[in-house]
Length: 263
Length: 278
Image 1 (cartoon, rainbow over the protein chains, first blue to last red):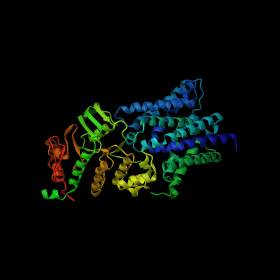
Image 2: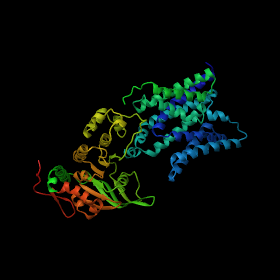
Image 3: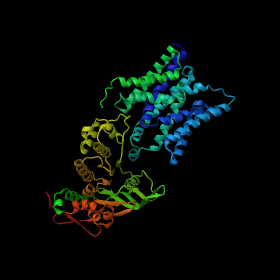
């Protein structure tokens, strides 16, 4: 196997492992559009990274947090629904990123790579980022698991039972930002949400516990990465989108295979 | 009307256990709400509301829709901040809460057992015991989305009980429960404070049932219209105005047949012939 292909596979697997469990929570908490909005702001983060001379991934994490904060502030004014606010933030930040990029004449940025991913160009330092960030996200999620599950089911009940709701929610947003920063190289800003929610959605029919669903989501995501890369190699298709199509195929197959369900 | 009244010994039973509770339990305050005011977007929801819940006591909040009952319960729990006034809970008190509405997303595979232990880690056997106590043991391994509304109410109560609460706050605890189940659940709730000695704050609009199991009624319509023992409240003109004659009759049905009297402050005074029923 070629080196670049091995790196692509390792990078993709690292992202899939972390995205699975996080994606289940995004589904349970109905935050798919929220994740998408943060991802859209990723390009602005890359530009920010270039301007501040910091790592682009760090720039993405920072920008995601700023957008999350902006959303919280905007939600205070009543009258507009959250999905409207998310729609505004998503496209405003993406456009801002594109415009800011045009001003950075000295910086060369692979725009298509950032938008749709460039999994075949993953280098060793990317791998460190992906696995380091991914494992960190998984460990943090494991620590947050119980209180996060409790506030996902009923926030006020959890609060009465002693869960510090705000820090837990904040930590969860931070994890989403981290995984977006980590996954950007693999599937790109515009497709990141798919890697978070499609494997998790595919896992639902076969899962009987929250943890089981999270593990299955990681498994399906990893399978999608393998299949997508293989298809990309076989038919010379763009790698990132191929991974997404592979995940979607697994999701669709889930409806054909009879689930061993208790329900 | 009087012959209907005598068919219902349940009320007597409840009333007597209340007097027993009053006699045996030391009145340790668990929750004190003083002069609470709250407006939401300029709209006054609570005006100068005060009450307290002591150990072994059941306090009911009744009132029409929009009277601020659930809001008051949430203020009492610290989930909402009052604009002015004081809310005090016994420091470190374990609180059990049964929210009015709880819907678990279908995308979350969660069994009743896992749901119940979200608030308090517990063994399978402990969970089973709690479910047995509320009459929902058969739901132990069912997906929490697959059980009925009435079963969910019982499961929520089991989750609250697993915390061994000192203070229980129940928001419309019997909604979705069928009529027989309602009596059962009220008997269970009124039994709790004796078995466990916890104080209970209960929001309900099911007047007749509330009255059967309550020590102290707070009749709320954004302010406290009247409060006191159910008997006392039932005769209050403010109550009659709020609930009409129909509501008054509900109370009368349950409290006409006395086995105790009240002093001038509405507190229970024991009467000599206490053993009127078997």
